[in-house]
Length: 154
Image 1 (cartoon, helix red, strand yellow):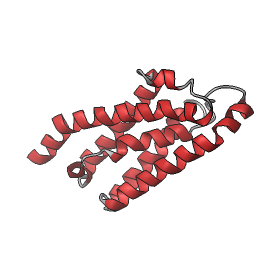
Image 2: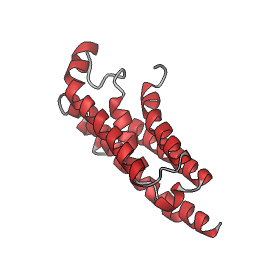
Image 3: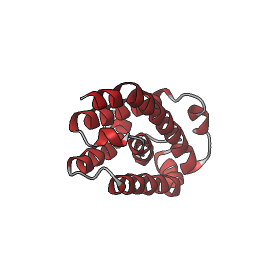
């Protein structure tokens, strides 16, 4: 989808996370579904990456968004359990994870930018995994400093 195909590709895990939390699935079910999404889209990216680059004639083509879908799952897997059971903090955490991931995926801090030179599907995927890890760290900092204390004080 245009514009901002990476943003569109990052949204499905957020919608799945919010839906699971809405239906009270904040434990093992949440973790299994998010891990399943991450693995499924990561494998698809690696397996089909060479063909996608050949088809679209460029490295890490914008038409491929499986990498963003996979990477977005990482910060969502790191959401604090105490936050997941309350709608407003949970939605705020999902929103922050989304914004942090998109910012870091666009900026591509070290070593993400360099990992794009890896051939094929791994080159498409690895920068998004790094962005996801950095977003998970940002999520932990924000969650532990502001969100969890706010929830505990409510």
